[in-house]
Length: 211
Ligand SMILES: C[S@@+](CC[C@H](N)C(=O)[O-])C[C@H]1O[C@@H](n2cnc3c(N)ncnc32)[C@H](O)[C@@H]1O
Image (cartoon, rainbow, N blue to C red; front, side):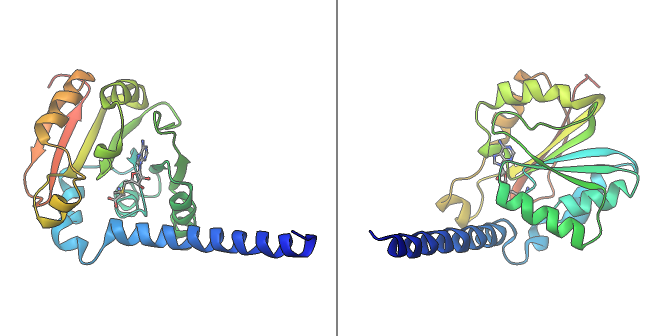
């Protein structure tokens, strides 16, 4: 190939990759948020039952496009902090942009590793994770080491799909609640609450100590 042709070829490849990365982020956003998610997600009630206090520090593990991140940031207020933790650099860039645009200085975006959330600081009050549990590999080891990211009074709230509904039958992205309970107990946590108001998801809260 001549110099001119290879330059055109490389420009086309670069353009296609750039277009694909923007489109992929938008497609993923749509996949996570879909249409009318509030109707089945009941985000207000989900945040309320967690009894979050202003000033608390929270990690939203697998924050995606921030469906819960912004709501958590509202709950902790300007003196609190929410770490938006995700392994997807494209989503993280989108989150950073949105946090700036919407005026949320209390959100800090963290690029995690698949085996380590890399949550900074001395420990958060709550790790919240929605529709992400089934993505995590070797979960007992993962959540055993994640204990060090929590304060002694810290909690982990796990929401994951329950396998109900036609869509979840086609795309089996869910975890049985018995599996979550068994794995989290093996990782050293104790079940504190199990909420049953979400039609499509389990919603379990674990603590480090026995109540
Ligand atoms: C289905 S999305 C859910 C996004 C968001 N929590 C929501 O409810 O809309 C799952 C997210 O988890 C992220 N993820 C997958 N494995 C992860 C890991 N090991 N650590 C952190 N994030 C992870 C993905 O990149 C993706 O953004």
